[in-house]
Length: 305
Ligand SMILES: [Zn+2]
Image (cartoon, rainbow, N blue to C red; front, side, top):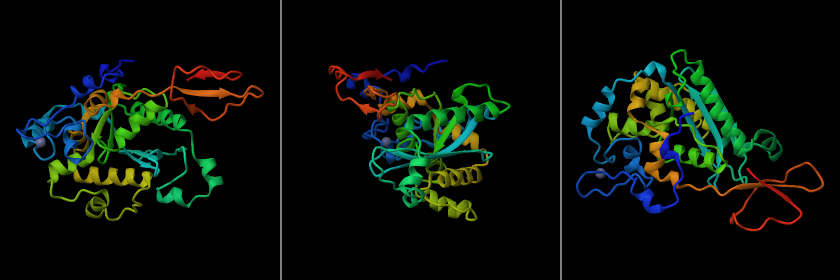
């Protein structure tokens, strides 16, 4: 598999800072290293911040010839627990194939309206280990790409689109994958909020709920349910931008470049160790060790995953 060199982990913060993209407008200090609204366009591959975005550049990006039929577009949304762990992920393709998962979090502090209602017993049955969820998600995205008859099979051809993804969903998705020892595939990451704001006008309210009322008022949308948000995003993006893949591609960035622009490639997951109970074959809950050099606990076999 081809590896994007931007994904290699770097330890020195100075090297990271030099990779941040800064808005070239004189006097503007907006940098891709800071995750807020103004950096959204820089984080999706444009040169300027959202205050100084150049329509000429946007038009040029729209005119770039892409083999859009070979790309596979996937809309997704994540919900975080109050502790900031991913507790739910929902995704769907343009044609409506869906992926859905509830994810175990360190402490159950659900904020999604669906998860809040379910009992602890049902929750224990439904929720998956994060590593399982995100490996399954990657497999599912590749399966969808494989089903695209025009796909060239390259993972860059998979566009993952999320609303405000550049400052929220993509960051949490990639960080969670790395935390669980999964190297993120070199997806093309798309921010649909950047598309709406740049193309339809910065003054337009582009909250997902507002967009649903405007473009697809007939759909049954449950805000903050990841499945419903992903499906709603599919409707509003496809209706507002009939050349959906072209629009998404213009506001897409390679995962590796995104990681270096945001400093995510500095992320150093501490190794997750599993402690095997000496008397049984069962493994205790994975624990995170703060110091990788500390001596092994005697009487317990330790394996680093
Ligand atoms: Zn600027």
